[in-house]
Amino acid sequence: MPASNVLLLGPPGSGKGTQGVRVARRLGVEHIATGDLLRAEVTAGTALGQQATWFMRAGDLVPDELITQLVMPCVVAAAAAGGYVLDGFPRTVAQARTARELAEQVGASPHAVVHLDVPPEQATSRMLARRRAQGRVDDTAETIAHRIEVFERVTRPLVEYYRGRGLLHVVGADRPVDEVTEAIMRVLSG
Ligand code: B4P
Image (tube, rainbow, N blue to C red):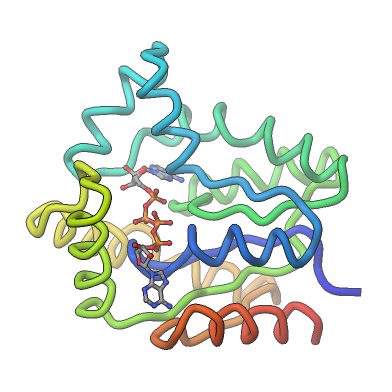
């Protein structure tokens, strides 16, 4: 039986969203993308969206409490319904600790964490291409550089955190989309 509660971890532009959709479909579970949830709140003009928008535009992480209150109910519901592929959360060790406490209480803990490993230059060129195609406000050269710096400083420590919990799998994401999907499915089935 492959893992059915899966976290995707990786720098901006590593393919979390791209792979999240594909892997969730293959596993028959829900895909939860924190960036998409936040952008939906911004578009709907909710109080949470109004607070998040400035952080996102600047390429900064939104505060831990905001993202946790947005994401965790979705995670708990998806786990109860059969599983989830969660991309973009947690992004800080504090988020991971809070999520762990909540998830353990309700049987929603991750079975596997996949780190999508990609060099910064490749991630940057993918996001610049996305900017040309989709016009995402946080995909400018300056903001991308900042987002990558934030990943290295604040999010990368999660790689060791999850390795220490025996959940981590590293997948090279510097190759075509189909190949990355197959590599993820292999580690989840192993
Ligand atoms: P996200 O929406 O998660 O943005 P992202 O990191 O760029 O990942 P995304 O999933 O969109 O891109 P992907 O790598 O798939 O977050 C946006 C913002 O929300 C953050 O900056 C932050 O402000 C906030 N936020 C989100 N979660 C948070 C949290 N937990 N705590 C606090 N704040 C949070 O793909 C990038 C591009 O590469 C795509 O165009 C894709 O087509 C292409 N691509 C992917 N795989 C490829 C491959 N193998 N080959 C070629 N191209 C590929």
